[in-house]
Image (cartoon, rainbow, N blue to C red; front, top):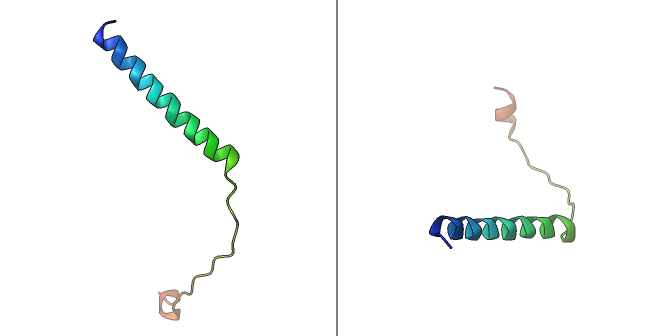
Amino acid sequence: MPSLIRFLVIVGVLVALGYAGMFALVNFVTPQPREMTQTIPPTRLNK
């Protein structure tokens, strides 16, 4: 097997593993919603 084809196969496998990992995260992990508040000082509002 020429080295270029071997390289392309390895890169393809790594891309497939990355895609499978993202797919699993999207489908099996549910984020927990929470409320977020941030105080803004009044001096920043007057600009």
